[in-house]
Amino acid sequence: MTNFSKKVLDLTKQIPKGKITTYKQLATAAGNPEASRAAGSALNKNALLVIIPCHHVIKSTGEIGGYSGGKEKKLALLKKEGIPIKEGKIINLKHYLHKFKN
Image 1 (cartoon, rainbow, N blue to C red):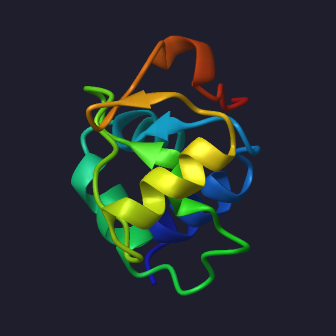
Image 2: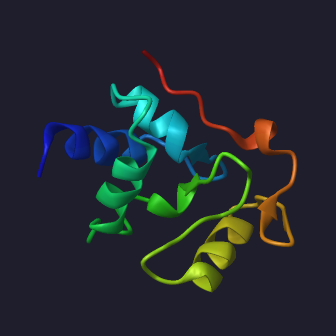
Image 3: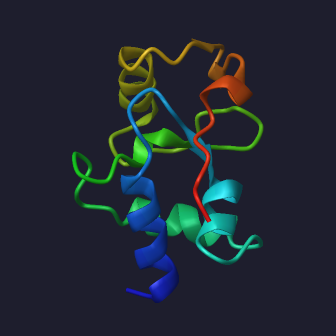
């Protein structure tokens, strides 16, 4: 596992319930703003879904994106945490965005 992938997973652990981030914000916080896809790839390999809540990471457009447990499971988890979703997109995205500390 690369250092970047480790950072992505460590940062994802910091996202509290009821908050989300984007692949772009996560890649930026991990030190490479151009590596959104690499951040997604690192999350795709996450085997510790309970410890590293990768369902908290979405597309910059507000669309929920992929999830190893399937999109329906990701939708259900986000809704259970109180994040409103309509037609596969987060409503009021900015309100639910997690801010990483530098």
